[in-house]
Image 1 (cartoon, protein in one colour):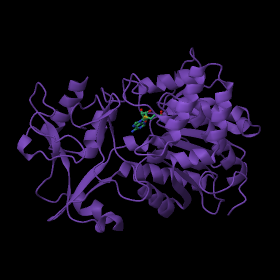
Image 2 (cartoon, helix red, strand yellow):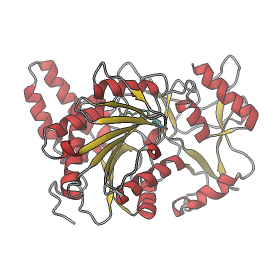
Image 3 (cartoon, protein in one colour):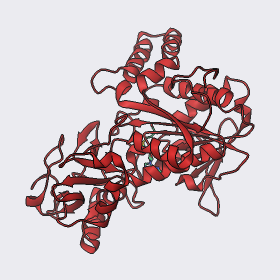
Image 4 (cartoon, helix red, strand yellow):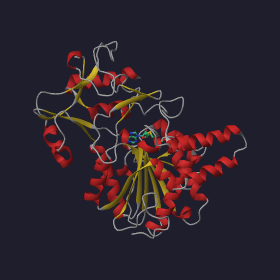
Length: 422
Ligand code: SAH
């Protein structure tokens, strides 16, 4: 399969010239003909990476409680709610959210339906099993939307883009995105002495290959194939239209010194705008969880992830996950300016989970275990999710919420669970 994406990328290069980093990422990750996410389940110990919801049920349960608190105190108990998840993986997070809500009165009977935004047919099947039961089936509708019913009786639908999720005045959306934005394509620009230049992905010219700081040098032998080519980044001598426009689109980029590289994800900004618009117009809320700097522009963070290690993003196109840090400030600015929403955070995962009561939940789970092994598992999961030293998850991952302007500060972001702060 790897060769297949290689051939697609090589052919595109031959026909239309070097690819933008975003075009390269899109081919590698979601090309329907063998992109990384399309035919595999990359999660778990045997896969390429492990995510917080897969580490412990506590993660999703606390998000379920946060959703309840948003519904109850921030949004004033809207009568019809639609749950939307972007990039739901195996469906574990949504399953834990829904289970947590079953034990709380009121909201669970007001969920009109669920929408999962998912590019991968393989992971959609996994989500079907997790949320609807092992024997559940998906039905196709004319407009390409697939549907089923969850074990709790909620109608559930699969789409490939948030814009396909119906936007009805009477339904409040509750949107969750965990490790979704880091998979969206980015463009890279470098501030050269001659001005900004967009970086492109090229192949087979080892001498002009440039290195990715913090990663392996992309040189002559780095990713050779039977075709002999090596994929690498290259800087065009001339200024392209994108290089003239994008770095000037925000004052945040202007200040950066020569040799700085920035990453910009227009697709992420479109999502943030759309989420913001729906949250403000339809009186809903969103929780975005991902990794990235809280207040600076991501610089040179594109990486490949394979078998739990960071690898060059150019070594095995279509076979390694590709990801880039999320620019939380960019998402926040676009949502606040263009959609009129209140954005809270980002706050570090460890802090958010502690405020939401992970300590008490871990103690309860720990006490409910009947074996030493079980107790150890709970302890390890608690530490892994909350630990803040070094590059641990509790520090690297951040939580950010969107909600209508002029609403109270949400719990987990400085507010109280009963919304008595404005
Ligand atoms: N949220 C899950 C999975 C994270 S992996 C968890 O935390 O465990 C990224 C998820 O986003 C996968 O489900 C992947 O198939 C999906 N995805 C990646 N790019 C996408 C895109 N452009 N459109 C829709 N889904 C995408």
